Image 1 (cartoon, rainbow, N blue to C red):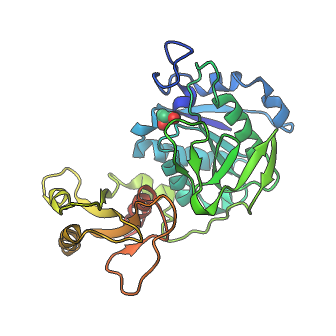
Image 2: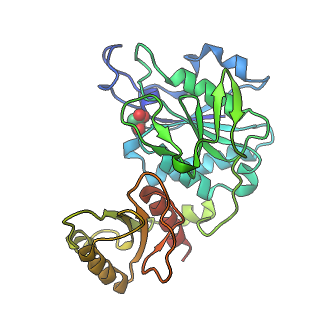
Length: 319
Ligand code: SIN
């Protein structure tokens, strides 16, 4: 099953020569599949079905789309005749959607059947679009023997939801898995697997999708960054009452190994006193925040700031 959500992979420009000036999320997922004539070569006898779940530029990704996507993926994977789900998505927030799905999809489903997110750095109208190859690779990954977990495929490389991060603004090979390295390469429809497929457990962040669906609003968690000359004013502004949704959590994109400017730290203590949960992540692209004894603000085992925010939202949903 191929679910469409939009992105550059479905984008159209006025001219074929336009690689960066275009509108994302224009073509439907069925049209995208028609642009990949070689797909039958990787289908291994399976048939493709498609469904449009959303049509957005992923910079505008919303919680209601995440919820619908999680519900549709769960429904599809629960069907005995569905082998896998591929999702077409924009590159800008695909790491967040992948991590969200990895955190909420029932482990008994994704440990048996994979969810593969496919994206592109050039619009579908480009002279040399990368979407068709990425889509074909994604289907090859989805139907690979033993495939499992939530993964992202781009430029012949497969990344796990936990490690994937967009690291490039322009080049086709836009993603990294940081220190962890990629899960696999896709070469002519074949996988060169470098690690085991990811297996998930119903961990602290796992919240049943039905429970999320009952919420009238998701816990509000914001990200603040620590930097030279930083003050606590952003935190104080966030704490001021009057916002439609009260602040429940702050993720600090901290320097280095989770260190925080002293001015910001003082403001974050005020936030904690007001009942706001504060966690640390690092603004470094590589490496994890290492646990230090009696650290004032906990960290989420090396998650990037955007993924730590999702983990904190899910944790707050449980409390
Ligand atoms: C998007 O994220 O939807 C637009 C950018 C992209 O897909 O590369």
